[in-house]
Image (cartoon, rainbow, N blue to C red; front, side, top):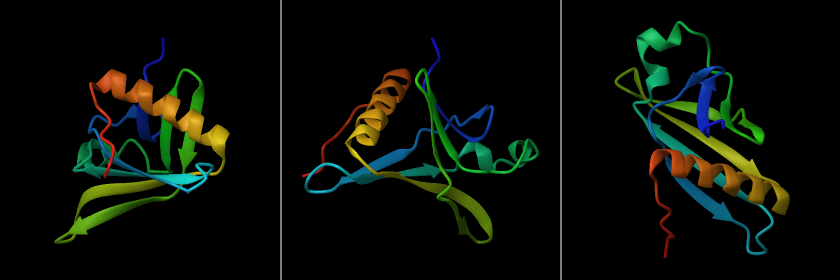
Length: 116
């Protein structure tokens, strides 16, 4: 069984676990997922020679979810973090995204905390 993983360069799993924040419209049909990676492996000088960041790929047994909305945060001229936003356009996308997150959470011993 394929493990749920996140990649920025196809074929290269990101090992740093992101902070993920979800927003959802009032009717529940659309939303966003913002991923923040602090000092991700992909920014390591030895990793960048494997290719360029072309997006964020959420990969599991059902396939792949992709966003191109990826940006780096710099401190003193050095990349420190990556932020990626995945836009959820309809209820089916929301369900699919949550299935990925459940698999990713299970693979990485994560828990979901609902904001107040």
